[in-house]
Length: 221
Image (cartoon, rainbow, N blue to C red; front, side):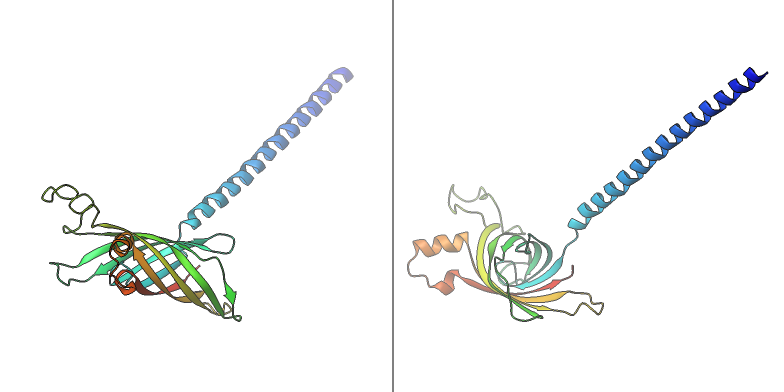
C-alpha cells in the first residue's frame, strides 16, 4: 500500500514538473513571437512612413510649365537631399491646347546657416531634373514625316540643371500647426538644348539660355 502511494506521489510530481517545463517553454516561445511581431510591425510602419511626402512645393517657370505643384522627400544626416515629383501646367499660347509637364527633380543643399532661431539661409541649392511635356506635338523619337536626324533631339524630354538659394522661416512648434516651416527659393536653370545652342551660337546672350524660376516649399513633416 505504501509502495503504491509512493509511486503515485512520484508520478504526480513528475507530471507536475513536466507540465511546468512545457508551459514555461511555450510561454517563452509566445513572448518571443509577440516581441518579433511587434518589431516587424515597427519595421513595416517605418517603411510605410518613408513613402509619405514630407513637404509640398509650388514653383513658377523653370521649364516645368507656367505653374507646377508637387511633393517630395528630404533625407540625409542634415536633410541635405531632396527628391521631388511635380506636375506643371503650360497654358495655350500658340498651340492648339494647354499641356501638362511632369517633372522628376533631385536637389542637393550642402550648407545651412541659422540666422536666428526662426530663419535659416541655405546659400547653395543645386541639382538636376527631367521634364516631360505631354501632347501630340511633343515626341521622344522623330516622327516618320521628318528626314532622318532632322532634329537630333527629343521635343518631349528635357534634362535640366539649376543653381539657387533658399530662405526658410520656422514656425513655433508649441501650437498645433499644419506646417513646420515655409521656404522661399529661386533657381537659375538651363537645359540640354539651351546649353548646346549656347555653345554652338556665340551670338546668344545669357538671358537666351538661362531661365529664372521662383518657388515656395511648405514643410509638413
